[in-house]
Length: 248
Image (cartoon, rainbow, N blue to C red; front, side, top):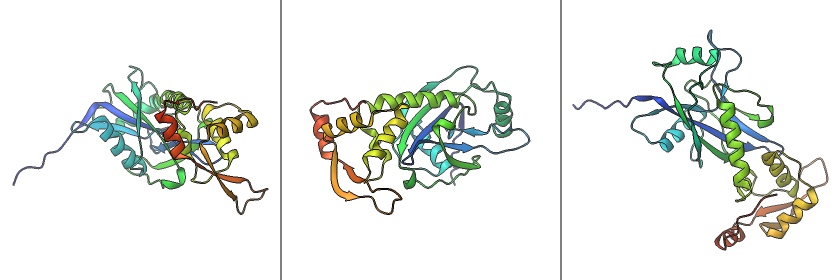
C-alpha cells in the first residue's frame, strides 16, 4: 500500500486575514484570541493567520487558515501585500507564544495579508485550532495587536478607503434592505470622518445606485425610515461606461 504523502508547513511564509464587518452602527474587525497560557500575557488578540503548506498557493492558504481558525468560508479575499520586517516578532509575549506552538519559532516569517468585507450576520463564528475565540471588535477600539498585526490592519483600512472611492463595495456590508442613515454611517465608519448628511444623500441619489422600495422600517423605537436596495443593474451600466468615482 503506497505511503500517504504528508505535506509540511513552510516555516518562513504565512498568511493573515483582515475581515471587516458592519453592524449598522460601526465597522468591526474579526480577531482571534490565541489563548492564555503560562507564556502569554493579556495581549493575545491577533488577526486570523498561520503558516502555509508547501503544496498550496497563497490564496488556498488564506482560505484554509481563515476557515480553520474562525469557521468562515466561501468569502471573497483580496491581497493587500507582503509584510516582512525583520523585527516582526520583537515582543517577548509573541516569541514565547511561538515557542509553545512552533517547531522552528526563531525562523524569520514573511506574511502575505488579505482583506475581505462580510455581513456579520451571514457568517457564524466557530473558533478552532490554536484560536480559543473568534470575535468581532470595533475597529476604533483596537490600539495594539500581536506581532505586527496592528500595522497590517492599518494597511487594510487604507486599502478599504481607496476601494470604496472607486467601487461601491460598502453595500457588501449592509442588509439587502437598508436606510439612508445606515448607508451614511457605513461610509463614515470606513472613511473615519464625518460626512455632511445632506451632501451625502444628494450624491448617492444623483448616482441613481439605489432602488426606493416604498417600504419603511418595522418594530423600531423611533420614526420608521424609508428602505432602499442597491441597484446592481445601474452599477453594472455605470461600470461598463467607465464611471469609477464613488467617493465622498
